[in-house]
Image 1: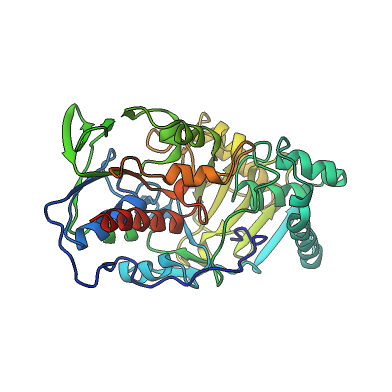
Image 2: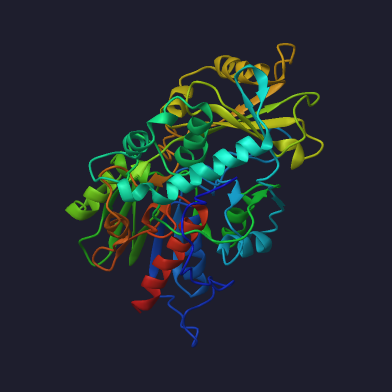
Length: 447
């Protein structure tokens, strides 16, 4: 799966394989200092793990009945269907690559070159036609930011500069699966900031036995209290007071790691109110929606390729299929996606309606006699009360300083982590992890 292939990777910092190790050579012990971490996603668990290993008293409050946050693996299909993060994006220097090994996460190298593309009517494109168009598309993305404007979306600028592609189904696929998937709604995406952020080099690997092996590993030995919904945080006094499930707990420090979508909904009341700069950042940074759909059959009928592309007239709609059989040879399954507004629309559709829409595309490629799937598994991230979206992106009114504003601590007592606070690696699992380490280091350095 390509991710930000158009982003320049110069200047990446090599990261230590042991980011969880103590920053203090004297192995200082801070048993008299307490920390409450709100949220047991990878950001919260990374922070909690490092703080506990440095001697802090750490409690993790999690609203759900499990750890992991958006690292969620559904094993009902007989395999691990990762509903959130699936890939390790670039393994060179990526802390998730090392963490995955430590956690016992099995991975599979997904080959971007193993791909077949179909147009309407099941017309197969030649490999050269697809590859040439893809190269031309990425060349456009390299230079389009020079045409950007603060008051124009990526979509507006793209079609102003390249009107000939407005009705080109293959280009609309590229825009959908290589831009909307990675970054956010085209009509909301900043035409100036779409290429911001860094990436790690190296191959892409997908989790085989579940991405949730990582949060399960990080949570070992931690005091994680599940089903604890935080509703209020008071941070003006000597201690921070956290209200959860109509009870109150206090700590010397609190780290808030809930997703940006939750912050946008004002589910947690902050006393005093958050500074204007942080409130503005919460409002201005975008939150996208990508939903996944896993379908199984008794027998395969599709191409023996890693990826199957279909280019319908409609955008963002079941146009990219991952051949799960390449990853799990005993499982006959395809995984597909819905993005942005169509992704949100699917959340009000029944399973039968979703299957009907997906099968219309599959049957156009492989014939009307193709059977319905035996099972459907799906996500609904936009309406999920614990996330309200997939991950952050640089929306039309976003400024890069907003990511730092989201990460800014308050009174040296209230701290914030999560992928939306990581200016270089926002919208990624490794960004979330690094943000947790960053906030733990801030607290350690205060001692």
